[in-house]
Length: 381
Image 1 (cartoon, rainbow, N blue to C red):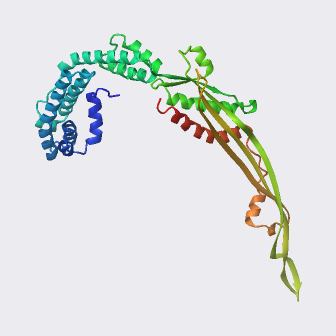
Image 2: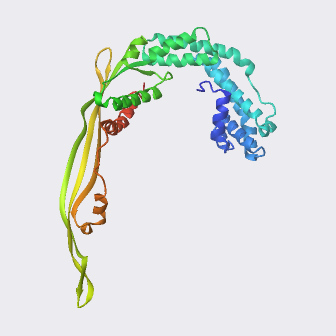
Image 3: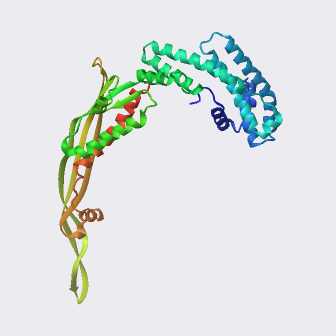
């Protein structure tokens, strides 16, 4: 994160966003710093771009004056983060300095850009101290949101001055107090679906571990891990279990029909000494078989407050998968059959997938509903 507007972050960001702009519009609306960065970015591509040269010539002195004045005003104020605010202004001046030095076209316009590197050190010390004190004050308020605020304040302290005082310990303390520890209980599926059930549960854990890591403020643990790790507390319990579970409900239907076709050559005969074809109607009895297997279930997610037992959310996610196959057989004259019937009669009898795969087939849509619901519930945590 670029919390204190480091030179590298600003150059990269503004270089991408403003490389095709001369900065004139930013200058006209009074954003002199952005006008400088846009003009410099354009001059790196085209050192002779007249509009950018003019924008830089006009905007740099005004940006420098504005930032210097703002930094001095911040230091003179009683703002609780006055040193951090001043530091941000000085770092913007340094950002302009680095950007201009990396652009030969810009250096021709501003040959001696100003920097405040010498002054930054003491200001960082003061900014670190005020943020360190603010972090402690936030942490002492005892709420989760204040602990999150303290974590960000201590993180900024660590960015300014690594290992400042005991900031590492306070970072860990703030993170623990800000984090919601959730124990996830996944009720096992019946033994004959054990392989697929384990795969489904593993996918859920993969989702949780991928989206809720040490960088966030929600952590998920299974009951065994929670006990082994001696969590400082458990805030919530998430219980996932299947309701109305059924796999492999087979239905087989047969439909018998007699089909015929007229004017089919069935042989030859002698008429007045000549061989002539004999036409007649041919028939066949066709049996069409349709086999269908329905697998379905409902996954229930209940999240409760671990201390009070109060239900925080209770949602159900249905899943359904229908496998089907059709084939046919016939008795009689094949010539009575349509091309489609002939093709179906060539098909072998079809058998459904094994229960493991049927389980996964209906569990897939459940997973696709469950994961967004988890993400939405913990969106503001």
